[in-house]
Amino acid sequence: MAAPPTVGDPPTRAGDDAMVITTSVREPERFAILYDRYFEEIYSYLSVRLGPEAAEDLAAETFLTAFRKRHTFAPERGAVRPWLYGIATNLVAGRRRTLARMLAAFRRAPSAREIEEGMEDRVTARLDAGRARGPLGMALAGLSKGDRDVLLLVALAGLTYDEVAKSLCIPYGTVSSRLNRARRKVRAALENVDPMNGDSDG
Image 1: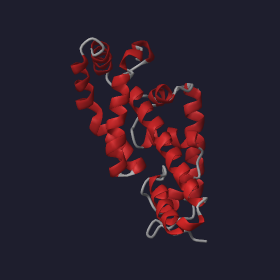
Image 2 (image 1 turned 30 degrees about the horizontal axis):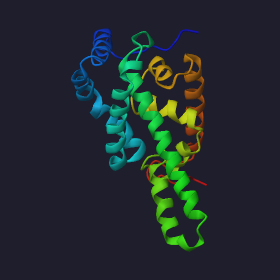
Image 3 (image 1 turned 30 degrees about the vertical axis):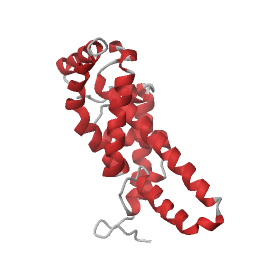
């Protein structure tokens, strides 16, 4: 079966990005070129996943992490853009784990019921369902982390299958199977939803 078509970065841009990051090991100020090229794109992706306030911090952290690890980037692995999305996606996972631990700590403190409820609201708002409400948010939250990451990298970031594979360091075939599974589950969850009000028929 033929692989789905990919668009991705133009070869010239991908090659230039790789050259910029390689050069930035010796000339750190060159890294600013990548920041200027991709910050808004990474911020937009994180904003949908976590909300604008958290996205601001994590977008900055994405580039700080990339700067610190720039000497480990291997041009033969592919373009810089998927690498940045991989870092951002890992930071999302880390943020969710931190929030979950905080929520668990509040739940263990019976005297902190009001604080717990407020924290639970914030955790819910930062799930990968983003700030989406209703059935779509529930459907996304119900996916496994791996399936959700693949679906959102394709749907929000517009990455190709090959770029997603490089971002998450998984085989190309795994991207396809995870995406198909995620789409089936989301489609099934939304099957009985009234598009006018977001409510299910049942």
